Image 1: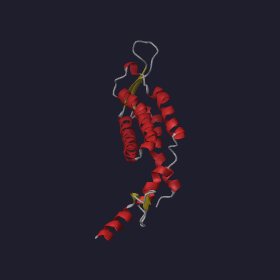
Image 2 (image 1 turned 120 degrees about the vertical axis):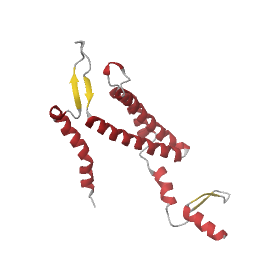
Image 3 (image 1 turned 90 degrees about the horizontal axis):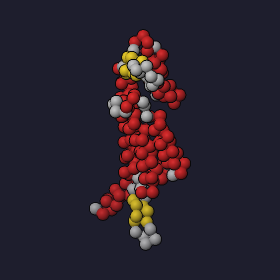
Image 4 (image 1 turned 90 degrees about the vertical axis):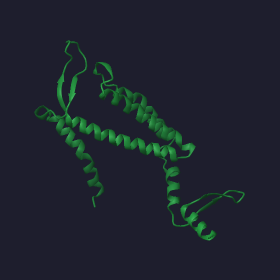
Length: 180
């Protein structure tokens, strides 16, 4: 079993490899095939032609971003209405940053100007509001139902009129056995 310190080291390996590939790019051109100034002689952004290692890491990054978006989308669909503001802000912030970068990599933006850094101007406040205003890091409302649902003991929640408003899986299984 890998210790927590070892897990952190393992997670740094891809970033370290990418860093070393960037430093030694002139000898293998795996990250950038070409890098030049605009042909018209005017000042402008570098003209880059990306290499196979860049696209490999881009695919890995966007796969992880898609998994994160799916996790938040699932949390949004499963959460009660009062918690949906948090997850919807996180989803919106992710889309606000990912979409311009995807459009840039697809070559849709003119003049080879990457709008991704500017997209952080819009996404950072969304993340901040989700984290601090709506308390995204308060995991109790999300974790409590999962914990209660997986307990082996039956738990019934009743209102003032003694009507069952919630029952966990152990309670449902016990109720089914009693009714038989």
